[in-house]
Amino acid sequence: MSLRWLAGDRALCDALGSLLRDPAQAGDALTLLREQPGHRRLLRARLASGQPVFLKHFTRTRGRHPLREAWKRAFGLEAARREWRALVALHARGVAVPEPLVLAEFEQGGLVLATRLLEGRTLKQTLAESPTARRPLFQAVGDLVASLHAAGWVHGDLHHGNLLVAGERVWLLDLQSARAPHTRLARQRDIAELDHSLAGSLSLCDRLRLRARALGVSQPFSERERRSLRAVGRASARRARAYTRSRMWRARRPGRRYARLRLEEREGLRWQTIDEAVLRGTLRAHERALASDSPAVLQRGSRARVSRVEAGGVRLVLKEWRDRGFFQACADALRGSPAARAFRGGVGLRARRIGTAAPYAFLEQRRLGLPVASWLWLEDLQPAVPADAFAGVFDANELADSLASLLVRLHRAGIRHGDLKASHVYLETGASGLEARLIDLEGIRFARRVPERRRIQELAQLNASLPDAFPDTLRCRIFERYRAALPFRSPAQACLRRVVAASLARSHRWSGSQCVAARETRRGKAGIRPES
Image (cartoon, rainbow, N blue to C red; front, side, top):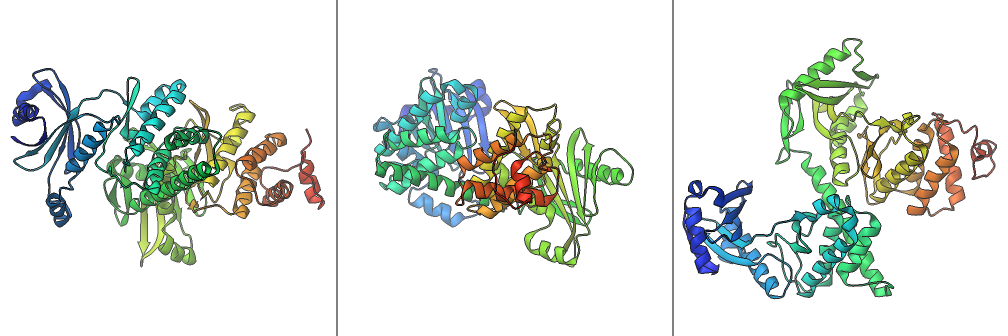
């Protein structure tokens, strides 16, 4: 396998060619780091001189669009050539990118791009391992993005995986989508994409600091700078919605992440990482449990049945829906069966980095095109505990803060759960305190925003499902923290009265016997403060 030099150091090209000519004989001098079949290979090479080199081998295949690939080759728009041009231009301007060394072409097809090897960790790994170093890291990342934009370029795929922390510096990687558009909107989209990728790792306050640093602005902000910061926030929200829609759309058909699942006359999808034999075994275990008085059955309702099952050492929760009636079946033919909706809802929540039981697979059974039964496999959340069973397990104050944070994150992202009871929120202690994860996902809805009426409804659902043992002062604390993060259009007192009234109307686990607001609501009077 010989190389034909295109740009860079000819002598280095010859050395790499001799190394790549017989990879089997190269031994430790050539290491495969990662491979994406049909796309590219990432390798680490060590030359005879001892120089470490990073190689990207872009394979040249016909792919699904041979005409498009031929057009790219004809006009020099292949990924390797685009990245080479960006690296050369940015390295010359002093932007922290890997030093470009060689661009060459294989005789058998495909291009190879060689850069100086950088050893380090991605930005996400560094944030997780060194939380105390966040502030200087924000400054370094923001300054790097600002220098990229000052050079007249945007990255085009700027996320935490394409930022490498090596020593005291942060470096930009994967510049094959980089371009020089010279527009403010393109720079805002670049920062917004980075902001979205860090949403699960950083607080909103930290992300605001990073946005300001990347824009090259500092407090006190002028009105124009405030508009720029708000524009980046809106672009980040649009990116989050588009990413969620994309993930949920992919969860409708087989692809790189999902495989078709067929068990007898039932069809559905499963994650590629879970074996079909495990799903078949757990389905049989579920049916055996339902046919007996097994303690593995968690719910035995007329419409839904749930059991905790195990097969091949894998523990799962399997939920089954049956006999939903003709009109529900007609509606499910358009919107999807409950299992399919819950599967996509779980995928959407994970895309938004909101804790949930991971959905592994679903099945549907159809008659005359109508779904009459469906099955959903979920992650078993044990030893996590539902929020309504907090007594003696969690501190009530921590529980209140965790529930308020969950509500804010859901509604800020435009997500409605549909049945947000405390029994559907599982909690366990993590690195950052109590971490909430959701179950019962078939009612999940994604929108641009949650109307005030729906927000009050979900606040009431959660409040009514918490037992009387949960103090009323902490119920008010949840409401106040929620209102501070997501203000209502209506006066706070009126909204609290509506939450109390809706909670009492549900006649669930909260009686309101010690709450002034509840007693006055029953008498038709106004009040907002509980008794201590």
